[in-house]
Length: 151
Image (cartoon, rainbow, N blue to C red; front, side, top):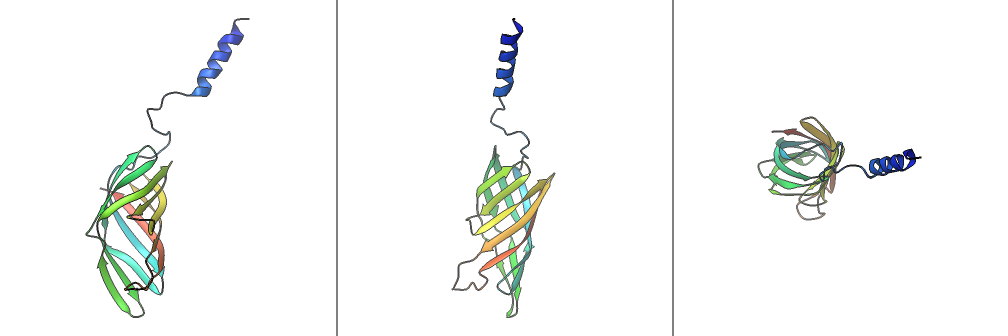
């Protein structure tokens, strides 16, 4: 008759799980420095890529990411009217999330969104950048690929 209370106690302990010290099992660690490149971004009749990578520094807190990206990256676009290059300014990495090996983050705002997966010391996926209409921008929205390698 003593087995039932011991078995119930064991089941209760197992159901509660252990202390994971604030980490999620199976979440990939992406904290550190990364070199980000954008390629084959298309939209509004233009094709854009980074000719110089953007430097990312990410800090991870369990499943959220914050950080910064530094200037030095150059976005080069080719359109029927010609080509142009613009430096990518420095800013904050915001709205970062990681779930297992799936990652998403924004460069400065939700207008510059990346989603993808992490595999070892690289990550990559789809980038969707939306520029304000009017003014100097005629691109509207661009979609393409991004890759990053750990530095």
